[in-house]
Length: 497
Image: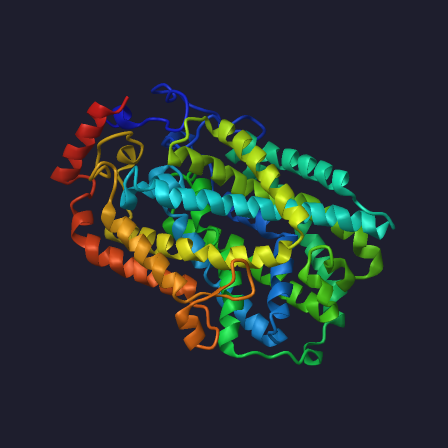
């Protein structure tokens, strides 16, 4: 019965029953959002740790650390924001538990609370979010190359920028196209290169960083805006990718080991790099831009830094592009996984060109990180409550059913979850301070609290509470093994093809 309801959605026929796929780096991954059989999950928690660490040892996180000091925070306020904000990598650890349990991606698991058709709404939000992070990475590549030309006393013209965009988009395309095993292998090895370079940067910056010379100090309420940036770029911002990469862990993998591998793999490099970025701002305020960071180091370090920055930026984008592709499949796009990567590459390149020639990248970046938590916090809150109500057990074949099954409900929609998401998003908007971004907006609650921004937390709590109150009884009846659950899976087996 289970095999009858396991289908590959988003393009092509399912892999034939009994067919296996070799999990091997530098070989095209055939699987998309279909369920990964137990026999094809060779990943270990150590591999998950090094994958996240390899992605996050990255110049982007240096910029985040410098950026929050530029908001007006003192160095020590920034340190507290970094430590508190990165504690929420625990969210990434929690979200990673769904992958081994189900053997599928985050936005296939998201069908459990939202239903197959209702899940298209948060999936679409996620695709826009992944695309935004991809554009961020490519835009930073262009800016770094532009700085290289400027360093040599020349300029990168319009045609040059266009060529760099095309080259960067094509370069970042390779690893997501090949798939999970390639990404995991390459990021692990890159981390071994990035860590020594980070140590060199720390040696060059720390002796010249004097926190006492920076007299900026703002109210803790404005400090919350910096916290939003750290949380959205870090632990909360990666939750929608988590299961996409943990799904190759065997189902029997210890939940504690999975949790800590993802949590520490993300949190440790993020904390260290953001602290270094904040220190770099003390040496040079130009550190708020990736192209200005070398001003914080010795002059001889310019070329090693920029040469290192390019593969770093492309490496972190591979995670976003891979997740973007499987999210498009979860939405229902009739393409194979590699086909979605091709489509995503074209769209990413076109929009990056618009962002670069607009010329307001760092302002747009801050606004993007502030606004994505409006949907992301509520979605994650619903997913965690749903996971707890189900005691961590899912009807995996029903997640892959095209019609019918445990999670079909009212025509593929769970209106309780969608209503909870809407309530959470409304709550988040009511406590958002984005006065200096585009679109400029300050919420009533933010105005009444002198600029505080608790959008990510308020939206998460409201959505989680609403979903719990509306769904706690109905979710219990959907548990695998119950009479209702078995009947629904039987319907799914008859209706899927």
